Length: 602
Image (cartoon, rainbow, N blue to C red; front, side, top):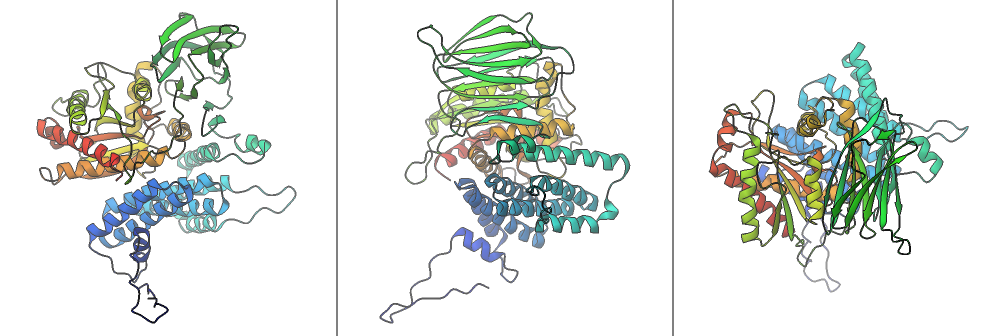
């Protein structure tokens, strides 16, 4: 039990009243094995408060330490109650802490990141009741942090192993009996190679440019230009195309505030990006161009008028491929990245920078004037279908139609729906419309589904690498992304580990500044709001928690964004609820209340 000294005044008067402890101090005190925990609800609320403080912290190291603290408190609850929700929340918090610690690139913080991931790995094995699962998770953590370890000085002795890597080595030796063999071992080693590549791709650039080239050689993506206040380019590693590459289409969306161009290709290839300033004397606009290696453009219009800040898109033949040029109305902020399966290059231009302050008003309130609601699927993309035939696309559109008038009437918020009827809208254009609208928040509405049909409950996602031991988050994201892949004629299997890790590397680089933390905080508000809305009428609603995953529909959003899974349409009981106006209205109320809470600074 912690002791608190009471001070006295110089005149020997009465002792001063002790200062009230902060949430952080209270949480830290409860980690003492001898400390007595308050009631469960109070302890959960305290852990949530520390987690929220983490998402609001402006300094990565502070955010990481608070997330780690909240995770530790959740683990203590798990040890007492054995509630699976506590363990899963702790795993997510440890993953968030590790990501934030690594972002500082300081050796002491990288070590703490490793320790956080080691605890997450052990907890994953415990939750799965499978020592082999623990072995796998620990092995991948060791590969990630061995790749991030400082190199040995030229001609010198190799650096000593870090305490974290030493502890993992001991755990792996103790669990040697659960080490896979044969094809399973080779698959694990290959995944280890991929994890190393992703770790190097996401690591902050070292001081030496030569070291940067060397360290990134195994990474699946390269960040060729990165500036927190300006341009960002994420491109694939320089690998020659395996065969002919053809531009199959160019999608575009323009407005007075921003634009997005999506260049669709028949196969993966590399590309280079350049910019040219406006030349008034020559009558030329500011331009951004993409040179696509080995690509042909037969059948594609040479010039496409767009409008707004993007005057037109031009396509021209180059000696070694095709150049796509965007003629801009002004010098704009630019972001260029690619998405696999099917392969396409996305060019975003905007009048506002990708990194902005989280504008707070006195009292902590945030500025939220515009919101985009995205009803998932539509048109010939029905989404998931329930046992009795209820279609996801119909549910999501109905909920969105209930949300929009509430936001306008109750919160005086301007709202845009990415689709207002039963039409198909490509995933990339949904986010493009949100960016062009200069939205302050983005909510994508969906219905969850599982293969066995038994899973139930509410779940919310933000854009991040998935860390759940069962890989269900990654599989769900792959299934949602597959709707786009199916229309493109390419596409990896939903469980393809290569594709999943590549997507995570790409999307993690798009989460610039504190956008990832702000999105997760909004997702947490949305999850809590939905449970509160459903509790009186549907008290048995299962809390599936807040997770991170690589959803294409959230890629490139330059505002906090969340994907909301209202219920499992694959479950007969959840499907029956989704079919009712009452349940859908409660989902709409939950979205509105979460937006209200975010705006109020909660």
